[in-house]
Image (tube, rainbow, N blue to C red):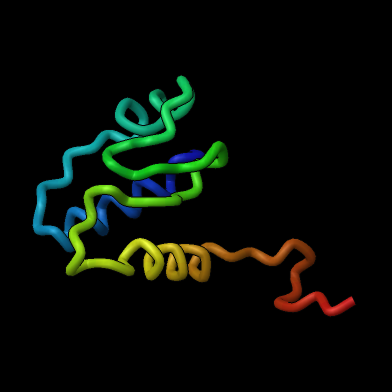
Length: 88
């Protein structure tokens, strides 16, 4: 699904902020995103649903979004041609 990244981030944010996680990925994220919404639960995303900004993250947790993006991209990175580095 196109909202997998934001769904995983929302789970992580709820854990960090000690909040309950009760978000349905399809009804709370996929449907609004498909209808054109680009701010979902305080998180701004672009047209590819890439996370840009989190309005709800308090100052004492600054950097959590960037750390999550780094982790998520490294965890889900799949080389296009099967090699790690393409130097040609």
